[in-house]
Length: 253
Ligand SMILES: O=C(O)CCC(=O)C(=O)O
Image (tube, rainbow, N blue to C red; front, top):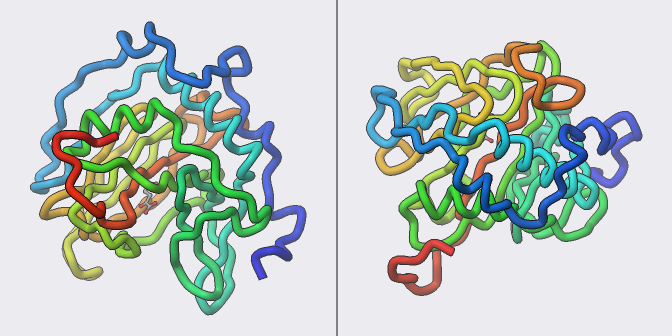
């Protein structure tokens, strides 16, 4: 079914173009030095760490350029809900050996793009570095799900990330572009929730006791950033899907 999505369900790669001058295969050293070393902000939830402006403007642009390159290989598409086939309000693609997909058959990880049937492009090194610095997990992420929120209707309902076997690994999320209103709850959908804003460059980690908390995006604030060409917000979540076969002492990449 996914193979038969109409033309209007894909977006052109140029929508992702932000910084055509930069096309680094690897992150330049000066950007590495320029990363803002901020401490996590208190969120009120043990295991939910928010690093405001963890990526500075130059790193955000460099990451956008890498995402644009990746989108040529793995064009963003609009996924479908399990059973009903209803279209999501966000567009998605993935990087990494595995990618998270949703369609009438359910939620799962797959090694290939559901429309092109090509393998997903590799996770950009800049993101692997972030994981190595912040995830405190002895194996690299296997999936980077990319969500594109565009327009006032784009949102993501409260949900748990529960399709990964490695639930002891955190989910590391990077926000780019427009600010969003992010909501975190408890371990039942009906539990009390708390909202905070995620702005471009912010990094959020859901780990430890909070790995399985319900969370979602109520809405974005259109026009709050100029980073994403055509407007909108990109969210990248790094996930370890399978449990590492053997402990990799002290290494995360
Ligand atoms: O867009 C976000 O900040 C959250 C994304 C998310 O919850 C998910 O991909 O599971």
